[in-house]
Image 1 (tube, rainbow, N blue to C red):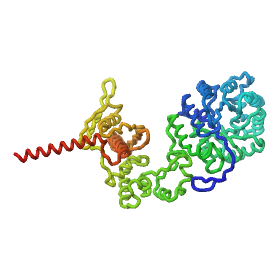
Image 2: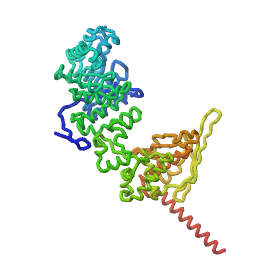
Image 3: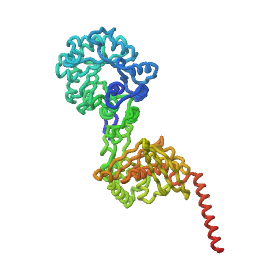
Image 4: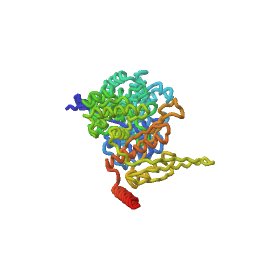
Length: 569
């Protein structure tokens, strides 16, 4: 059976299943800036289960109450695809297995799968554990024997295996032999310090494979040398059928291997079976963003396969080629991993970029003069400091204005922002806005947590009777960047605002030497973009339109009366 990757090249299915072991909830939480509550961990675990991973390593029950709390809750949860796994270490040198607190905590977790680690590198045994080499071997064997009788499945992490193997091969063999003698079902070879390179990984895994025959082998790479993904793939090609890593590559120091590109490469390019097949692979981007969201962390735009920029095209020549055949600059179909193609707009853009983003909406494909106007205007504004790469909403309005197809939804008469600070340092901010819609003038004021918040509130108050949907808009991000820093306090600033209405997200920008004015431009673009989505060219809501019609009629009648009166005089 064969499948195809995104650029149309045939990929022969190997018929080999590679187990995916996710340690986001254990190893991943050791990453700087990552901290999950118990409920967070349960949410992520269920998302991983839906994705179809084989194992979810949920924590070390002997190390903290939160992890033990997870296992207490997990017993009553329904798991469809994944096996919940508890992690721990070998017994303490002075304890017998049945009296060892760490091993007892593993058993009490009631996790169906247990995994424990032991020392492989003789340097660690003598300098970290400070025990005799033969005692460490006995600790591995007896720990395995005890745990084996208290779980459905037992795995072993050979910590620092590759460093240990290169330093003292004979001793590394003894530690693995002890784990196998104790009854473990999978030997996981760990590149704990992340210092091993792919050619070494492939060679050593091949040698382990020869020694242990039919034993399932796993790989646990870290990314300290920047080659964790390559190491995982090399290990699988050399005989490993079990990969341990984390979603988005979270982990201590430089992180664990990122499972997302590993799964994509194994499935789409190397022909291995992972997860639940292609449908699961198409959820990789969704799961990546879910984990970032739960962790309250910003996504990494250039993350392979799932990042926002993974299939983003900026150069005009590139976009022109992609429009003809996506395989010219895309190694797989973005949809194969649940991502999407993006065409960026900047001063590097050519007409192809504009056609790709706005061509269908405005019928630009066969209008070269209009295309030139848009590109020229784009370059002019970017020279002033505007950046439209991620500001699709502002660019949409720019095209409308350049083509004389924009009719403002309201007319600004003026706005004012006032900030007072009393002698106790208490700050109050008020903004006033005066606008006109359909001949009707609204003058409103609003307090706020700072000038932009106050201005946003006043604008919404002024517009809501005409356009009620403005109350659906939420500002989800606000950024300011100095355009020309050498001008110091007289420099221009670029304000970027991300808005959402619980259905869509859009970004708008404004530029000015005055940060309030730049913010105003971005706010207005955000509102007008929303109104174009909800009502197109219709200017007013029905009730407001009727009121405006009555107002216009009254003004006309009044004007007629004045004309009659003047004629009589």
